[in-house]
View 1 (cartoon, rainbow, N blue to C red):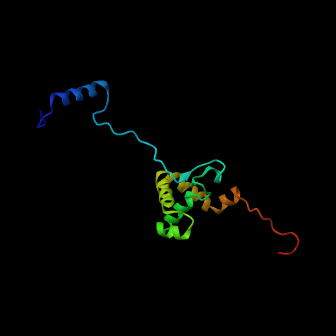
View 2: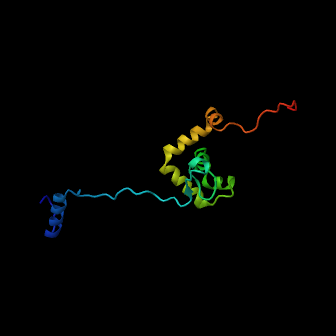
View 3: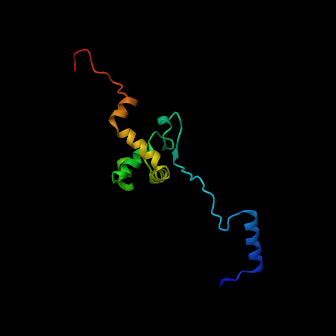
Amino acid sequence: MHGRSFGKEALSHMRRRRQTGFPMSASPAPCEVVHPYVERRPQIQGGRPVIKGSRFLVSSIAQSYRRGLSVEEILREFSHLHPAEVHDALSYYYDHRAEIDQEIAALTDLKHVMLHYPPTLSPSTDGRG
């Protein structure tokens, strides 16, 4: 048997799997990764992913990381964040990279930003500047 020796029980099991249509090497089904520090709620930041309990965008952390900041530097820059929140935000970023990269591109495109988020202050018309 080509140098392999299987017991009767193992051969019987392999035959049953072949007959029932199950693959011989079943891989685990993909599962959704839980991100305990990231949430999406329609009423917060337009439903974009944020650090849970805040309005702080995951894309802000991802953008800082892409600019070359280390986790420690991000924590210094945003001192209200905890290490687990930053690591989870980066994990979320890698799990949803295309979506977050697209969000970063849109938020850094000045024309897009001005169109979707116009300034709330109007130029003064009373001659003071």
